[in-house]
Amino acid sequence: MIGLEQVSFGYGEKQETLSHVSATVARGECVLLCGASGCGKTTVTKLINGLIPHYYSGKLTGQVLLDGKELKDYPLYQIGQRVGSVFQNPGTQFYNVDTTSEIVFGCENMALPVPEMRKRLEETVHSLKLEKLLNRSLFALSGGEKQKIACASADAIHPDIFVLDEPSSNLDIATIEDLIGVIRHWQSEKKTVIVAEHRLYYLMDLADRFLCVQKGKIVREFTAPQ
Image 1 (cartoon, rainbow, N blue to C red):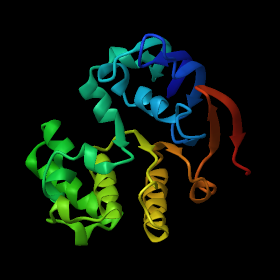
Image 2 (tube, rainbow, N blue to C red):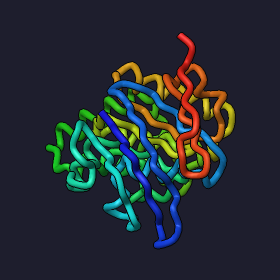
Image 3 (cartoon, rainbow, N blue to C red):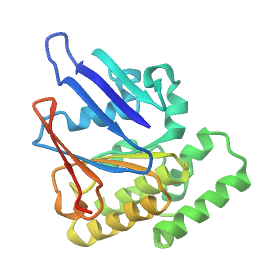
C-alpha cells in the first residue's frame, strides 16, 4: 500500500534529513516509527501524508508510493481523502473555533452532502465516545481533549491510512488509554496506522512492526511477537 524506495530528503540545500530510506507498509498494518528526537521520524510522516513535497520544499530523491503510484503525482486534496493526519500539537491543525465544526471540517472540504456529514459526525462521535465534547470551544479544551478532536476530524473523512506524529507527547496516562482505544478502533476497521513516537510502552500490544530510525536512516526492524 505504502512504499518508500531509496528516499532521501533535505529541507535545505546542504542538509539531508533522510538518507536512502526504504520501507513498505501493508494495508491494515500498524507500524511504529521510533528513534531519538531529530532522527527523521516526523519527516517520514510528512512524506506519507504528502506535506512533502506539496507543502514543505526541499531536495527529494527516490520514490514515495501509494498503491504503486508516486505520491507526488496525486493532488493534495486526493491525498487528504486517503490519509488522515494527527499532528504532535493538534492546535496547529484546527481551522474552526468549536469542536463540532472542526470534526466535520474535512467533510465540508470534500463537498459531502449535509445528510452524509451528519451521519459521519454521529458515527465518529459514537465510535470515539466524544458526546461530551460536542459544541465546545476549542480554546477551552485540555491538551488531551484537543487530541481527541484531531483524531475525530481525521476519522470523519474515512481515510484508508492514519498518520500520527508523537500523539502522546502532551497526554497524561489516562488520556493515553483513550488514545489506545482510538487506535484499536481503527485497527478493527482494518485501517493502516503509522505512528511516530518516543513513548513505546502503550504501543507494544498494538504495533505489528517497529522501524527504528537513526540519523535519517532505518537501521533496525522488529516484528511484534505472535
